[in-house]
Length: 225
Ligand SMILES: NC(=O)c1ccc[n+]([C@@H]2O[C@H](COP(=O)([O-])OP(=O)(O)OC[C@H]3O[C@@H](n4cnc5c(N)ncnc54)[C@H](OP(=O)(O)O)[C@@H]3O)[C@@H](O)[C@H]2O)c1
Image (tube, rainbow, N blue to C red; front, side, top):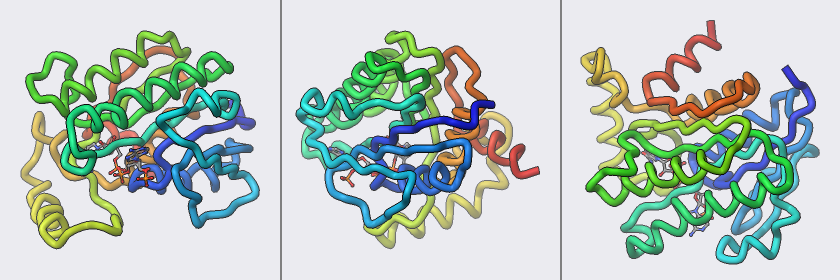
């Protein structure tokens, strides 16, 4: 395992991205971490460089989009973004633009969180966009490309509404009944997804892989033993 890795995170202000940043900053295998953000993060660390960027104009900061391992946890919802095209910018255009620019500067691995049900042929716009972004980045030819497809995410989200909190509680309660093919629908903790991404990046196995939610959990559980 290479113990001198560099990482770039897009989405570090989010639920999974925030956990990912914590994991990367405490992992000795990573000597430097860059976070591309819209607003500065409160976190400070000697290994961390924050780049405040305009995602609509990434080519202006192309020289800063460089690291060995690129982690993408960007995402929004159609409701939050306001339209399907605004959603697609965040969940397709920006992850792809970062992937293209980083590859030109020598990036080796791209690890992205998409979602359960990602499928470029889906009739559902959300799932189709997630599937399409996987295909588009996979086709760029990274040495390693890994898509993580979590189920519903649990974690400390500042804007979490009561209904969501209760929903997660109920879903967690019923997790024991979700076995076999249903296991991938279990709620999964954001820090589990973040840790699994870093574990997978450090394995650095060349090729293209999709890791479903139950396999993300298994990867994490195995590493805890
Ligand atoms: N939530 C779930 O249950 C769930 C389930 C399965 C898959 N996923 C997927 O998993 C990934 C991570 O989810 P999450 O819950 O960690 O996301 P999150 O907490 O909502 O964070 C999203 C990230 O995307 C950034 N972002 C949003 N809109 C942006 C815009 N217009 N321009 C630039 N950056 C923007 C946010 O930055 P700002 O802080 O600057 O807004 C933030 O860093 C996403 O791709 C999501 O679709 C989520």
